[in-house]
Image (cartoon, rainbow, N blue to C red):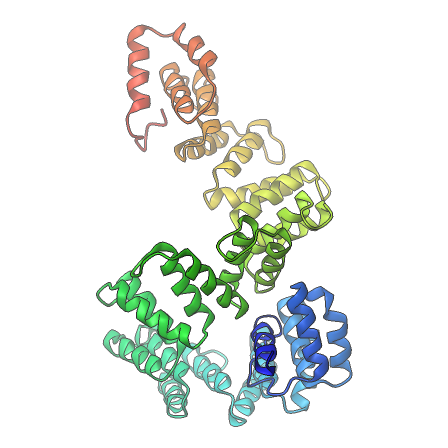
Length: 493
């Protein structure tokens, strides 16, 4: 196997986990390459963090940069911005340009109440820019666009971005394109914005190619054309861009603008995943669970892919890892670890994980029982539209567990779940209408709700029989008609 074949996947993986790109690690130290190899094998940053710290403390600038990034993002370590800044500073002192950019950005972001710290950050960005950092130039341009840390100056921002374009940085054209789309109340010129994207694509920017591909796929600002979308994704994929590879894979999977080819789709997803795309890594985890052309079913491989995707902050991947620990698949069953992964996913906005955290708090599984916390998490998931959480939260309002008892609120939650087709929601509404709980008693609506529950798959024969015994034939006919018609906003039955 060639050295290029060995180093390429290590660099690709390092861009995901270590945050190191080819410009940052032109010649990775043998020790760092060893760590990258271990990480590629395990997919678990916690297994290499001790050795990484030892390398950083021994003076390896790339390892110092990686420690700064990991501490900043909470990869394999408890997040700590002060410690992150400390490691970035070590790398900066050795002339690490990317660390200089990152430290500048971190000081600006973390120094909201510290003007002196923010100005130090600005100076570090200027230092990185003068040392050749394209990212620092773009960061400075964005600061001029946003205003606050520096005085807003669209003209200066455009000048920096145009300088970046002239210096061969097509990504600067992308930022400039966003400005002409009206970002931050900048003047709008969509024709110029589109042309800048085209210029960036012609300049070799895979990001611009992907954006243009998405535009043609959705018909945003251009005439919809799956064939043109495919062409841009292919151009991006030819540069081994992970997003382009993944987007092209999705076209082959769906047969959109190209003949459906599952084998080709899997190959592209895998290449995108190996290149660090979290969405593709999650997809490969899904495929490894079920098996697919060229992918043997393997829970171990699935977990490895999910760990990589979770390390990039993908909530659904963290959720899936939680399921592995909950079910004891590949790893020993451990509800505390499962809860930790579910919580991470929940805090990053995944409704399913928020519901799961609610269940764990409600049942005292993997964490001390806390019905108030359970209700709070069910509420978050319910607000995101999860029907199961609406049922659980409604039940808590019904019984007064974790929240003050409130039958009207319970009724509203059951009604929302019912409208989503949840059979338990319709059953609850049947009970509430029958008994007049939180709503005016109405046995016709109770029958209609029970009938809808039956249509949704619930066993309600006994309930319907009881109601038929209390209704006239005309009322039953009315209720049957009510259950058969589309839902009206003002008619839960």
